[in-house]
Length: 135
Image 1 (cartoon, rainbow, N blue to C red):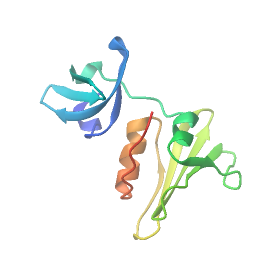
Image 2 (cartoon, rainbow, N blue to C red; image 1 turned 180 degrees about the vertical axis):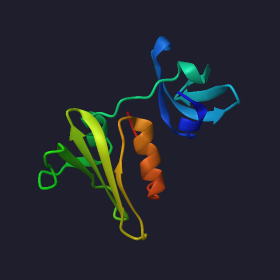
Image 3 (cartoon, rainbow, N blue to C red; image 1 turned 180 degrees about the horizontal axis):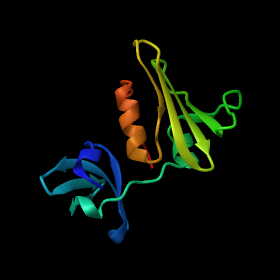
């Protein structure tokens, strides 16, 4: 991964060590991560994105919406926020489309490509949803 792809709070995978951690801070060459009692500093090349799965979606407040499911796949709607609607289409286990509809703001983000957890985190933040993603 590259530094420009990450924000503080993003979940990342340090595959060579079998660690899944959150980004706590940055240096020019490394990301400082931590979760629970662990803490580490890793070069960006060692970090990998975490694939977004249906299990992660449902664990974090997304529910299957059969009415919105279509040829693009099953639709999972974020049900925890009254300020925004977030719908993820799961097409062949690739979360290719994220639709965000901000209810109290004059903005709509359509067809944002989302395949990884950190991308979902960024998209929710864009809509003002400060959701702490759990893995």
